[in-house]
Length: 252
Ligand SMILES: NC(=O)c1ccc[n+]([C@@H]2O[C@H](COP(=O)([O-])OP(=O)(O)OC[C@H]3O[C@@H](n4cnc5c(N)ncnc54)[C@H](OP(=O)(O)O)[C@@H]3O)[C@@H](O)[C@H]2O)c1
Image 1 (tube, helix red, strand yellow):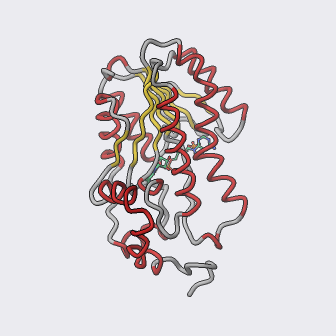
Image 2 (cartoon, rainbow, N blue to C red; image 1 turned 30 degrees about the horizontal axis):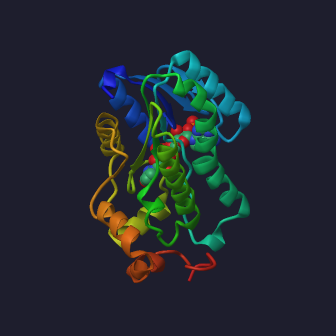
């Protein structure tokens, strides 16, 4: 889609990646309706996406705005050995990263199907295609999101709705705390700026490609992991050793 025709509903618009996306989209001539619990720049709907009322508020505001692009960028982190995470954290990361975009998409579909052309972008993660120690719950939420998007893309193939996946690697925002930064340093993981992710979004919207993963070697890792699967299990000992305790969370 030409970006100056885009009317973008952007969740997570006040976050590190979302605010860079909003700025880049507006700079390219798109109109943006932001979503978040806190307010933000420009047209905005305040909503908690973990609630039915929040989703209903976004659907109403989107109908009035006339969205023809939806970018699901809201999300929450979850880092650490599985044993360090509470049942409530597991519930929350799946609620926000997986269930909320599914429920919002389902509620938006009737209005989107009335548009001549629509693009739905799900912000996934390299960690949804490569399972890394320390990211079991987060990776599950993003792997689920990728599975949802892939099936929906095929389900809606004969409609005006094009479904796309954007897969950032680690990105320098408030999303990643000091523990993740230390893990990234220990494992030699590169962190992008949010502007790199915003620029990849603009490319994705213009190309209409099914998916785009950002960065090398992550893009290659995503492909190899898809083909080799369990045969790559031995490649992640350094990541496992970088956790405070690989199994219980009690410092080793
Ligand atoms: N940063 C990374 O390393 C990285 C890498 C790969 C993928 N990603 C993905 O990229 C997306 C954006 O990440 P980011 O780095 O920009 O994170 P961020 O700076 O923490 O922003 C996250 C956004 O999600 C919104 N949000 C959280 N809970 C919400 C709720 N209950 N209802 C509505 N909105 C909610 C927040 O807005 P409010 O607090 O105002 O509600 C915030 O704007 C996420 O989906 C993340 O999983 C990030």
